[in-house]
Image 1 (cartoon, rainbow, N blue to C red):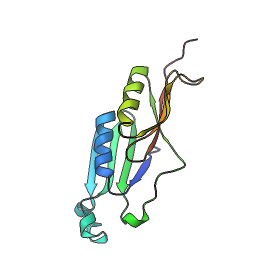
Image 2 (image 1 turned 90 degrees about the vertical axis):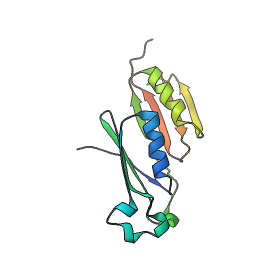
Image 3 (image 1 turned 30 degrees about the horizontal axis):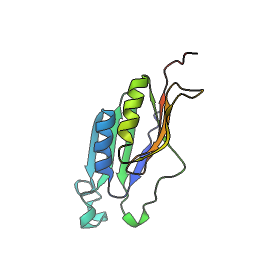
Amino acid sequence: MQLTPHLSFNGQCEAAFKFYERCLGGKMFMLAYGNSPMAKEVSPEWRGKIVHASLSVSNGELAGADVPQPEHYQRPQGFNVLLSVDDPVDAERIFHALVENGDVRMPMQKTFWSPCFGVLVDQFGIPWEISCEAKQTA
């Protein structure tokens, strides 16, 4: 069994996943509506939008798509994508990469559960928590 977050976008899925690939590395796959069996189910101007994207990073995966009907898009709420990183330097780097043109909700800082933890909303409206899983020292 594998649990994979699936993110919805209002036409920015391709840009978002290219951004995530640049920030996180990994291997990406994307399929546009126009190249899928759903091509006739979306408007002609929406056929270049993404019906499925995935980014495989380490032992996890992130998936996403543009909603088939833009008027049904709802801004994400009620969750954060939690990214656990082993190295505090990598956690800081990833946090600062993901927050480009976004908003910091909690700056990277030491907490009682992590030597390096921060919360942000990226430029595509996706909320993230970046947590370093390295052992804390007293």
